Length: 147
Image 1 (cartoon, helix red, strand yellow):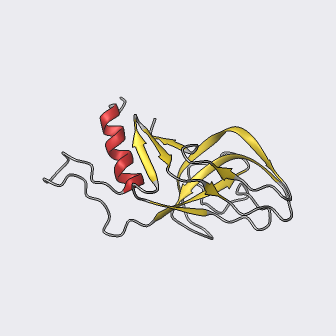
Image 2 (spheres, helix red, strand yellow):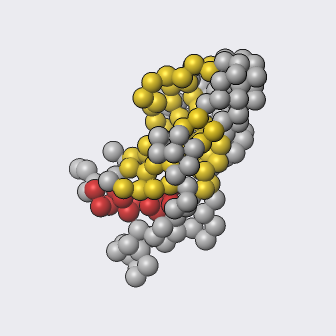
């Protein structure tokens, strides 16, 4: 069984932009959170397993790597045709030492430390990070889908 496109958009809107998913349950549908919060995007050197937390040996370790928060709002994400895209650039700290080859990204609720990943995706191509490199997803480059 597969979800229909309109339902994928409704669920992505609820998850990514904190907009109610209509026509489910009561008149308001599946309601948004009172406090939306943010997703924290992370960079990974391999695909994390589905049961793995944000902080694993697969997360980037270059100095001063840190996860980047993106608001769960229509200012943070745009949903269309079954895909949620970031509305602004997601820029990580510039590497001052260490190196990583990043192949995946993750979305979770923990800004630091241990927390479970909600979604994981592969990059279109790997990114070698070393001193002087500033990893970034340009606006519209981070695609999240439910398929």
